[in-house]
Image 1 (spheres, helix red, strand yellow):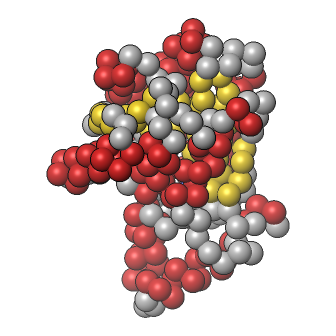
Image 2 (spheres, rainbow, N blue to C red; image 1 turned 45 degrees about the vertical axis):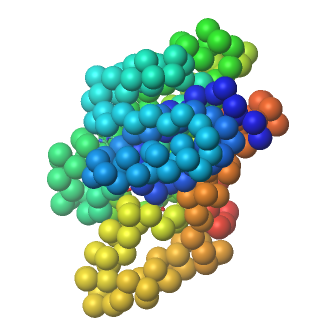
Image 3 (cartoon, rainbow, N blue to C red; image 1 turned 180 degrees about the vertical axis):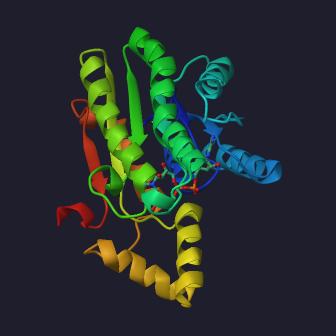
Length: 261
Ligand code: NAD
């Protein structure tokens, strides 16, 4: 896959799945705009590491994607640094777990803003340039929880179902422009977002992290193994290829059989 000359903006790419996608896009030759939070020295290490490993330009935007203005600022920073955004990966996300009756309203608002609305604002800002150039790829990182639900994840499941709807609408609106929009629906991937849930479960159940790891993956997935950020990255790179030119508006599962049941 050759993405030389293309520019990929990957939100939430200082960690986990986003970082795996950024590295896969860089390996395929794309210039990369990183985004997300973290210690400045850690982010600079990742940024410089990707540049050194793959010989592509890598820039960073620390924009907070919980507001539309933050998202527009990030897209503007990418366009200023690279002159264009060809690939937009809406990946940034957060999680909070509680029953609906106990769910804090500020957590609901934050999850909807970051996991759903930021993708709308990003597509609105980046799609006009893609259309003008006649080529673009928008990839929304949804979840198995975009297709099926679990208890205690009302905001997350609502946001992920919502992002599949947004993906379908964008796919239809951008058809015949050279721009596709698809969603990747991962099952479990062992990232800081999931490690926090495992630590909480171990504390609550008086078990070990390793026991909870096995239990978590076994509860939902026939294939009892985590997918890796590199595997999610490989699927994202495929969606940028000519082979994927007519895939649009689609949810693509990479979940060890979770939603096949
Ligand atoms: P992670 O916690 O490792 O990474 C999340 C990233 O988002 C980080 O870079 C963080 O700094 C960034 N971020 C959070 N809030 C932000 C904000 N307001 N503005 C800008 N950046 C922000 O999580 P992850 O597991 O890699 O999750 C990435 C995406 O994949 C999320 O959308 C998540 O819902 C989805 N996902 C994860 C799994 C899994 O098992 N890990 C499964 C399915 C879907």
